Structures are given as C-alpha cells and as structure tokens.
Image (cartoon, rainbow, N blue to C red; front, side, top):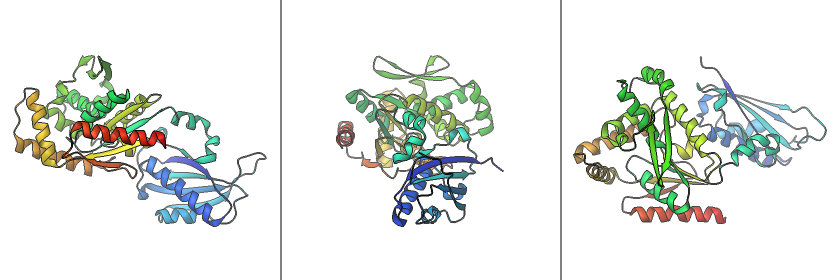
Length: 347
C-alpha cells in the first residue's frame, strides 16, 4: 500500500447555502486540478469550518464534484479571537504514490493570509506562458520566437527528456527499463544555459544541444517520459527554473502539471502528416536521412505514448487556448500567442 499525503486548502464564503457550496466546489476543484488528482485517488476529505458558517455542509459540494467514494466529514474549527472569519479549511487525503513534499496546497481569496509563504512563492513568477502539444506541432520553434520578442526566458522541457534519453543510451541502459533508468538517475547531471541568445543543453558538462535531436534519442525521450521517477525529477527542476522570472515553457504537461498557474496556456496542434513533414525537413537540414513513412509512424507512436501514459498524459488544460498550426506560419503562431499575452496583461 502506498503512503498517503495530505493536501491542504482554504477559502472564505458568505453564510448562505449557495455561497458555502459554490466556494467549496471552487476550492476542491482547484485542489484536484493543481495536484493532477483522479477522483479515485482521494481517500478522505475533512472540512473544518468557522462557527459563523452554519447554513450548509461543505461536504455536499464535494459530492457534486464527484467525490462519491471518499470519506467526507465536516467539523467546527476551534475559535480563536481575531482569527479569519467565514473560513472553510480542507484536508484532502490522497493515496497515489507521491511524496508529501510534492503536495500543492491551495489557499484562495482572503484565505491566502493563512499561508503568506505560499502566496509569496506563487507570486514569484512575474508571467508564465505554457505551451503544450504533440511532437512536431512547432512548440519549441514558436516558443523560442515568442521568448525573443517578449524577452522571456525559454525553457525547453522536451530537451530535458531527450538529455535523459541520451544519458541512458550512452550508459547502455534501455530507456524502457524503468528500474535501470531510475537507478541511474543519481548520476544524471544536466544544465540549460543561454549562450549568445540561444538555449544550450549540457550533459555532464558537454554541449549536447545538437546530439539530442536524433531520431533514436527522440524515441528514447518518449519512453523515459513514461517513467514517474524521471518525470518527478525533471518537473522539480522545471518549476525551480521558472521561479522569479518571466518564462515560456513548452512540453506535454506544462499547463496541466508543471505550471498550472501560468497566465497564458496554449495547446498547439497540427495534423500528424504535417508534423511528420516538418520533422523530415528538420532532420535533413541537420544532415540526417529520413523516410517520411517511418517518421510518420514514429510520430503516431509517440502521440499514443504521450496521450495514454499513466502519469500526467498529454492533454489540453481546461483554460488553454487551442491553436491549429497546420496551415499557419511560425510568424502567425507567434503573433497569436503574443496577442494572448497582451490581452491577459491588459485585463
């Protein structure tokens, strides 16, 4: 049996049945979303409510969210003079194999004063743009252009998974051998550095920016991305990189998992045929031979892996804007994303 972790949250409400249920539902949904939880992973949810909220049970709203199997309870919070009024607190107990340090606690509205340390940490990202999408949809290319235009830091998460793949290949480890890959992670050392305006990838001090772009490494990246220990290690690094600066990050689970609070989220797509065509052109430009049919098959296989993997699969975030780049130029996609940023900043 996996160890359980506890995710905490709080929100304020008016003392009406409608407000208590509405605010509770918002809190529970955000706790589930930010921690990427399936309903069946929730073991129990306990609400503590201040004595000035007595018109409804918060647990009723949790049932509406879909928590019909979890144990729910509502108790009155201990009264302390001068404490935050009209407050609903939640302790969400989860069993999904994650560590307590990975829990993302959620404090909304006026309840943020309960955890100013978390509020300060969440405000460190001045502005974040998350771009998700399948292989070959143009994420990296357009992210680099947007980063140049807006003077944002570009973080290529796909390159990070490719670096793990290359590391395994060089060590003679199959990227599909989960136990061997996990055991080798302690020796993995990677850096992303900006040099002359370009993001460079260094593996054990060696510049592998070009080396990681081979078909073999790309397929291995898809394989290691299925492994939870790899994802946990890289997601932690990605979040650390994003703190305290304007960033644009692309990958498969940026808007849904890595940066769920990103101000702008884009889901970039294109047909499999168009993506294979682009990939062939990229490989040939780098002096590598490529067969369209083979590349198309690899694209489709990677799509399957990315969308069906157990941990943080590729999917469109609920608040993401979908852009189909099949018949668009890079410049057009770039302008569309910059327009979204301008709209959000002006709102």
